[in-house]
Structure formats: C-alpha cells, structure tokens
Amino acid sequence: MARNDLAELSAFATVAEERSFTRAAARLGVSQSALSHSMRSLEKRLGVQMLARTTRSVSATAAGAALLQELAPALERIGNAVAETMKQRARPAGRIRLIIPRTATQMVILPKLAKFARNYPEIVLEVTSSNDPVDLIAGGYDAGIQLGELIQRDMIAAPVTREMRLAVVGSPEYFESNTIPRHPKDLKRHACIGFRFSRSLYRWEFEKGRKALSLSPQGPASFDDPDLVIQAVLDGVGIGTAMEATLAEMIANGRLVQVLRDWCPTFPGYFLYYPSRRNQPAALAALIAALRFSE
Image (tube, rainbow, N blue to C red; front, side):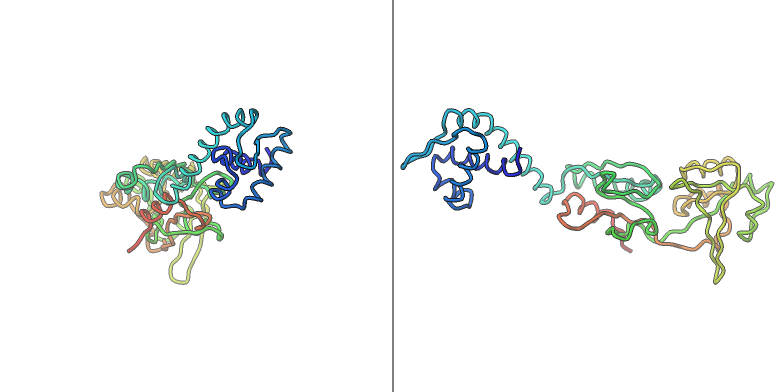
C-alpha cells in the first residue's frame, strides 16, 4: 500500500457515502477540487473507475461498490483503534511496561500497588525485574526505576524514594567467631558476599569526613539478587550489603548486626525515569504522580 492510499481510500468511502463531492469535501475539510483530483489519482493507480460522475450526483461503480463493501468495516476498525489510542491521553488506561530492580519493586511499587489499582482499574502494570540499567526504547519499556547515578542523562527522572544508605551487615552467629570490623580495611580479614549487576561486582564504597575508599568484596560467593546476598548473611556465610531501609526490621530485632555505619554515606535513591514528556499517556502520568516521593 502506498503512503497516501489509506487517506485516499477513506476519502473515497466518504464520497460514496455522501454521493456528492461538495458534501464530502466539507466533511473532510478539503477543497472540492483537491478531493476530485485525489479520486482521479486513486482510480489511475488502481486502473479501475470507482465513481460514476454526472452533473447532479456521484455514485460508486460496481467495482467501487465491491471495494466499499470490504473497505467500510476495515476503516471502522481503524477509526475505533485510533480513537481508543487517543483516549489513553485523556484517561488513565492501558498497559505500562516497567523495568525495575527487585529491591525497588518491594520498596516503591508493592506498598502503593493496591491503592493504585483501586484508583486506576483500567491500568495494567507489566513489571520486569532487572538490576541492570537498560535502554528503555530498545527494550520496549515505557519507564523504569533505577538508582539516580545509573540513569542516562537524556532521561527525565522523578524521585520515588528519599536519600538512601547501604548497610554492611553480618549475622550474630558470624560475629561470634569473627571480630566486628571497625574500619573498612578490616574487611580484608572477613568473608564478604558480593553483589553483581551489569556483569560486574559492585565495589563497596566508604566515606568518612574527607576520607574515602572502596574495595571489591572477597569471599565465598556473589549473587545478582540482593535478597540472596542477605539470605547468605543470615545463614552465617559472611558479611554483605543491601539497602539499609530494607534491613531495618532485621537489624532492630537482632537478626542482623550492622557495622561500619559511620563509614556508609547517603546517596540519591531510586528514580522513575522515562524518555520524554511529549504526548505522555495519561496512564504514565498517573503512575508518576502516585509514585513520586515528597517529604
């Protein structure tokens, strides 16, 4: 199908329905001469006369009527599909494809999901879990949630958590037979459980006053899932790290022992990011408003 065929076929259906170039042109918002030229162009390309013209009226030929019988339902379906798409700008509805680390899903999405679903029953969230930064457009995602430092600068980002801090933790059982580290350098004598993302081992970063250092954890295991890191810590395998906010209850009830807290600085937390504000669907705007963090 040529680039202009759909527009010309739609115009043909209008002329056939109105049985008048004058009325059809007014309905389509074009001049009568432009419409007449468009119909002659269509007939020339098809090699068949589609409209019988007289000084008083216009009607579809047999070939035109046969085409119209198949064309009218197709145009109606296209019109309905376009109208439904346009409604997504006007009302929050449709699917939103998101890519989010599991930790962010637990911290940001799940606590607000029930209320969001009640408020916007026509929105469906399709959540894919991944710790790695991704190209939203190439991956077919509408938006993502990621740590601010990992988001590309050409993205628009809205904060969805407060500032965050990593916690370095071990189990009480582990520290029964291992001394508690007082300085990050002491970690060289400990079994450190690593966390991997983007195929790389995350370096533990520490800062105190003007002093800053980082180290790669050395130990018996590393995982690409922070929940598995903490499970290994709880089992006494070694020392690990995770977001302090996710460990607060286990630290408070004594299942985990937090160490080196005065060496762990805060950093910008998670942000919801997306490519552009232009023609933003109402569903995405509603999600951004629901998740945006405010003090």
